[in-house]
Length: 138
Image (spheres, rainbow, N blue to C red):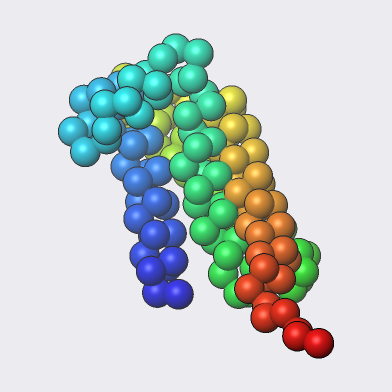
């Protein structure tokens, strides 16, 4: 479970870092694999690329024991709002960077990615345990 918390913190920090670097071209970020940076730097993917790390983040957060519609719908909704707030914070930071621009589309894609990740985690939490239950022998 600890590894999940570390992944969540790293992905959240990565979202903020990549949103706040002066140049939006990911090809200049040395730790990002070349195939990812080439994809992300394509003009048609400039907005959707915000949703990808939020999908991963939403999925990881959704796997936590206290989050999920089956446990409590209000916690699940609050978690989605917090993921959306992270994207809004990242976009607000871009207002202070000369080569970056605030984008409502990025907020929409990021919020949608977080929502999809949380939903996939809820589905996984409700369905995966049945595959690991021992079958009864008659």
